[in-house]
Amino acid sequence: MGPLKEIQVLRHYRRIWDLRDGLELAFKHLFNSITIETDSLVVANIFHNVLHDDDHYNTPVLDCRWLLARLGDSPMNHVFREGNKPADTMANLGCSLTQDFCVFITPAVEVLHLIELDCDGIGSIRHYKT
Image (tube, rainbow, N blue to C red):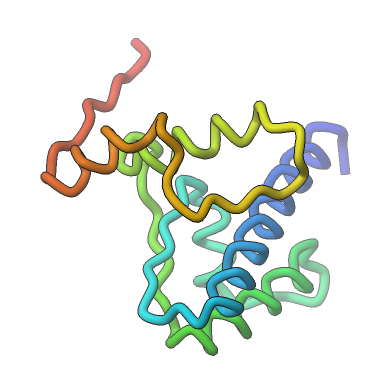
């Protein structure tokens, strides 16, 4: 496996572990009937496909599947990053945090207006590079 492939595997592996952390939090707080949206098509596909013995992601994926079953088999959907601006903004905020793991009881101030727009059904424009 070359360096680029290793970096891609690590990036997806990290996203799966982040999802696992979120599912554990939802399970701990007795949430049910949740919907999971990811902007990573690779991660969404990993969860919809059969695992093989040589898959790099087996352990966290199996953990996530177990948690998903306990949370009522919550659906996982792929959405474009622009389709969930509040989550994208929170992820970007997370990049600047010094803590390894941070739980927000209420939405960060930076996303409140985006949540209001989302609740009102106002989307954002997706920009394509030409």
